[in-house]
Image 1 (cartoon, rainbow, N blue to C red):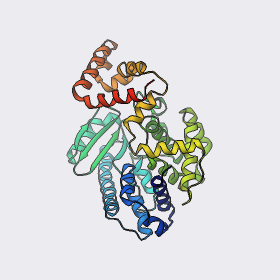
Image 2 (cartoon, rainbow, N blue to C red):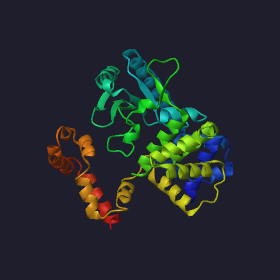
Image 3 (tube, rainbow, N blue to C red):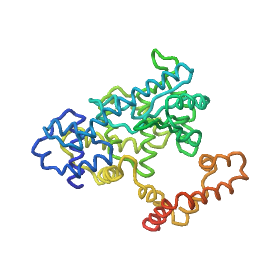
Length: 365
């Protein structure tokens, strides 16, 4: 593992554990390259906090931290206003992911936010759309997938989920009826939350979805460490293990948690096994949202080039219905959906097709 990766892990560990980094060590770091890596992983604010503790100030990191603090405050205010309207309209809801996780970090802004995710009553989709439009949001995508996307300049992005996982996901059946796991918020008629155990299982499943696809960055490992540091001793690990077993991610949960605790528990990076190093490098090279090459490489791991193209074109019916909604009306429309998707790629996504062909030729058998 190169020095830059080690520097990032060192500073993140210092940030979340309240450790003051060694000033001489920090001054010897390449802050320009470190900034680019931290940006790739959406952890600039956390790194900035560690740098400040060491008495090192960098303009780029300082600006990123101030922006993260402002954005978190802005998103919190907007979420409060939106959910207040949900309460008035009798729409049940449950905040997800980062909006919950960020509260476990020791400083405001330390855990950066790109958007706000909220699960809501899918039967009230039209009412929710009216609320969001009345608040100045534009409906970027509504009813096309299992989450609706609303944007408001300059930085507000809300993903409002009708389901936790889409119909094509391996986790769809488990999370098809999330209300069975949801607990009413105290002092609220329509607000809900998961138990600490079920939130951890969901965040693990969501992470696995990305890890097993295009990859996910070091922030996911940091989230795991912070969650376990704050909640770990009170969690029912027997229950968590059983739920992860049902979701077929028990091995991943154990390996990822062990790695997260191992690398962030102190400011000294311990010796890692070969498999731990391989896993860590995958996180470090993926970035927050993964890479296109990773997605193709993983798909080609157990199939030939021909099989990849066949499965890419002739996708499962549930996935086709999500991609081309009109095909859900009748199985006879499936071939039309195939033609529609191919035409859409050739007309609107030629650059992505070129990337795919290049990656398939690179990694295919």
